[in-house]
Image (cartoon, rainbow, N blue to C red; front, side, top):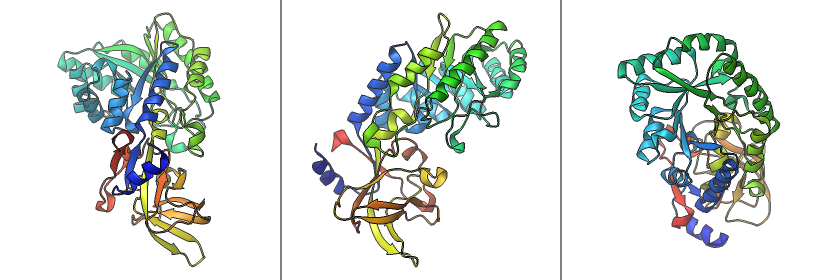
Length: 385
């Protein structure tokens, strides 16, 4: 379908909605899988990025596993046809009920984030007569050079077991007979565009895993997390991230022992570029200072990233090409932070025009809320137009 035909089809839909390019999604998943497969690496999709049923179905068809951070995500993965053996469960605050369900299902591993969590999982597994497979999430104190709200591997972050506690972790393990330590887990942050950061991570991991080996801990698996960023500024120039270079870095710099498997937890890089948020212009207004504001029918309830992180999504007018004006794009929510962009250039934009917010396939619909009792945004798929 050409661009004009697509726009005509979209115009007939009630806005706002997320539009998913399913062909791009499948190509992205294929390229990621092929790049990882060159080295025998295993990808678990970070479902927190987007749990739309069609997206999850495409991930399953691509043969990937699932990285979950809540009990409901684990349940969704199992009920969507993923093998429990391909499911990992991370997150700093797993509840007893979530742990019990995951043990019953026999998931691949819990990524444990504190010494206390190790003790709790041991107690629950003992009561249930189960052996829990766990990977120790170590906080390696590596600066991901990204936004502070999505940095997870620095010394002061809440995630992972501190590298200063690894001695205590080893001492603890000998007392926890209902745990089976299967590996180490690392994740230092999200939207990482400086690939040298991953080289630094590999160097740090090499040191940490060598120390564990010297203590006699057998590590069958290394989980390197995810974090690969995308091009938000010019999505069309980089619709699919450079997975080949990403995995090549780990192949070159990560020391893998014979028999060890290496796992990754990619989310944003797999799904962000395939999704757009389509919205319709409601009103034009001018401030007392002369600023031109466009009010659209989507808000921070549908895409919270700009309000939460100051994130920028490329905005395009799908139905106007004439002239040029500078606009601030705002939504209908009763918050001053409900602004998607300030002082951006667009064609002359009027009531009824359709705008698209690009690169919204990750952490868009998944973070939507019903604040102001707004309806949740719908979903439209390219292969169903």
